[in-house]
Picture 1: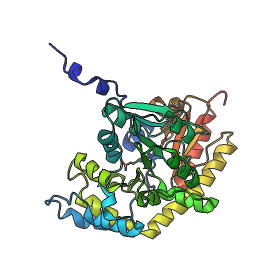
Picture 2: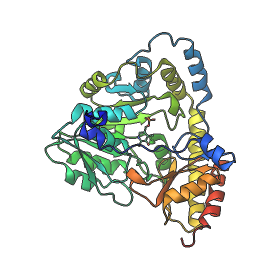
Picture 3: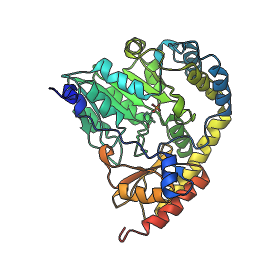
Amino acid sequence: MAKVGDLVHERIRSLGAYVPGKPLSQVEAESGVKAVKLASNENPFGPSALAVEAAQQAVAGVNIYPDTASSELRRKLSAQTGVPVENFLVTGGSTPLLELLPRTLAGPGLNVISSERTFLVYQLATQVAGAEYRVAPAKNNGFDLDAIAGAVDENTRLIYIANPNNPTGTAVGAAEMDRFLDRLPDHVVVALDEAYYDFAEWFARERGVEFSHATEYVKQGRNVVVLRTFSKISGLAALRVGYGVGPAELMSYLARVRSPFQVTSVGEAAAIASLDDNAHREMTLRNNAEQSRWLMKEFCALGYDPVETWANFIYCEMGEDSAALCSRLEHEGVIVRPLTGGWGSPNAIRVSIGKPEENQRFVAALKKVAAEVAVR
Ligand SMILES: *Cc1c(COP(=O)(O)O)cnc(C)c1O
């Protein structure tokens, strides 16, 4: 008799399993101390109070199916950006939209391109769609747009660019992105994943450079879908709201492939309210920038060479097996992400930038457990 596993399509059987970080409660039980989680780039201050209030009010109406078009949120995003409503598609976090793109544009015989050391969802989504996933080498820990352009052929339909990149925190500037898009043939769509957009904008202003022309690309009618999320800056990760901005015709096809009612009325209400909370956004961004400088300084003082970040996390090569290092950190009640397995950096970690006291806990723990290593 055939085993049921043998009935699963080969392209699914070959998928790597996603290994999530250990939950806070488990680390606390194992270490016996109150733990801090700096592993998933979440907002350390929680959601905006306005979003919580809006969500609470919306809960009373959950007997009614949500507006599957998320019309109110799309109108608000349209008003904020000057991009027409029909260019927006709201999804349950931006991950489902990342998955819709290769299912809609690619398939067997076609290919999708991205970089080494980037977000794991790109490869998974491409494989599930049955398309070939091409990996361009990284340059200076980030995207090498020349290498990506060089990998394009007549069967390429999609390119994923994480800007800033997760897990390395690097960014491509607006002028470089302009030149890249100008070079691409028109049978290729670019998924410009700006999950950390607000953080990068803040750093760009501090550093006196221009970060992104993303919404301009859409207004110009280019083959670009810009993805943003309420999971990071807005602190709504568990409510699952994200969106894409792109060519209206493409967005309407993506909407047909998407499962209906993916975005809840509670999530939509919270997202709308969070757009009005500039104080919450500014506090988050100011803390992130200040604390990134403090963490960079501490890493350097310990003899490491962290990568300058444009997001809300820091990537650092640790010179030792990061899975072992992270499990020693967990013993001290500090959870960070080892970039082993599919991430492709077995000696590196990604630490999310938390509140000052959380970052201090991380540095104190690192000092303690790194000292246990004979050579560094
Ligand atoms: C966090 C993240 C996302 C989006 O996550 P959702 O919670 O699904 O919105 C997308 N891309 C990158 C690179 C991320 O780090």
